[in-house]
Length: 270
Length: 270
Image (cartoon, rainbow over all chains, first blue to last red; front, side, top):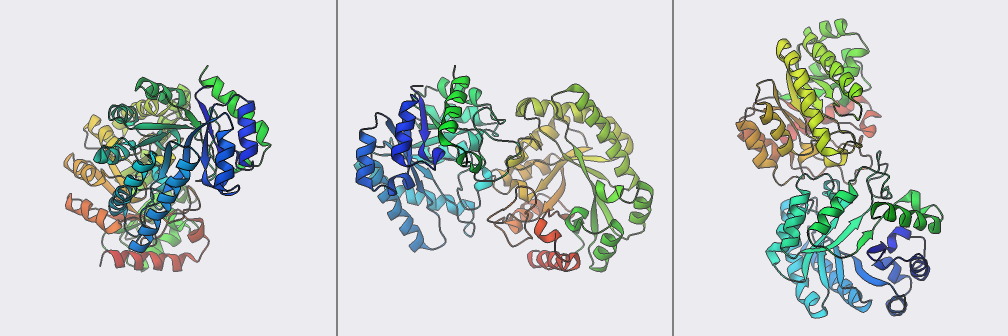
């Protein structure tokens, strides 16, 4: 349980205050905070609340979305990411998770160039604040508009291009489980000092919604324990972050849902 | 237009007879036949109709689905594929397209072993009949139950394992457009003599249904012309097969839809 972290989006219907209280009661050790949870409360109150919660703030979610057809839009994205970094620093999050973005008009290769340029532009600010940037490769089904970085190999390429202690990678089993290079790329990621975060949930079959039908660990086909073992063997000692977007689970009692999460977690990591 | 082929599933509401007539009227040269179109009519009548249609029968769709947790199920799949090969031969199709399958319980690696075993079991029958087997890698979003072969690299691995003139690969832009190794793998596929078929459609953004929301060429973000150029440069001279599953298009007048297909095709390949 000392490595269990939950993303506030997982229990979206709850306020930040309620979420922190419920997580703490169940012995959950870490929380990753989504911007919407902070905005509802205001940055100051949210920071105070988090500081007194007894939970580790694991990451702030999410920056990125760098590519755009127009350069003015790209500049706006850069400013937005700098603000996200400020907010991350304010709430004491050591890491900003990046959904890097993709522009379907520019195409994937140009989108990756724009991601690189965006990272270059915000890195000095991240450095000043001491906040890390975690590139999260997204499943290829999100390659149209959400991310032009769709494999761990591509995320490693990007992180290694910068070779900077404040840029690394977030590994999410939902996005990467299908990739037969995953184990090798986890090793590579770790050897480069780039393995910054590890997210878990499951892939339901059938999946009924491309965004909001993620499964509870154990109800799908992702070999979560196997991938976790690769991550551990690579020397990662950080949190296992539960990040579930699910219309189904959001519509049920969130306390019962959180109990299911804790049970599922303990079943895998017994 | 002499390289334009349409899959019968693309105009699903039409009978085989109507489809062939409408395709022919518009100067379409080839047809790939789905099993449902044959079953509605019976194999004999369908064969006669196709023989007199003036259209090339490009492929029969679709065999595969080899993996299963139970060996009895796997044996059933093998028998089913042999029957599909018989039907392909009966309608004069030189190729059976394979959606290889995946068993979420066995996992991806074991599923690939089961695919290999399935191919081994049906290859002698394919050889006897002179019908080729085209392994179609499917998008990673179908890795749960539809295919454990999700990249062209994996399909090439499988084809090269057999190194047999009756086993090759079908390249579908919908499944593979996101992959930054695609161009290299098309070259590899062709050099191995394994590039047997080329399917086109588009990826709409947003995609509203994981199965049946494919786009008409030009309305999405797939660089169809660029990928086509790679395929042509690799020496492929076969058909460009339009395979669109779409609740939206199936609900419109199919004659108008087919006009849109011909226009979109001519716009790309002018």
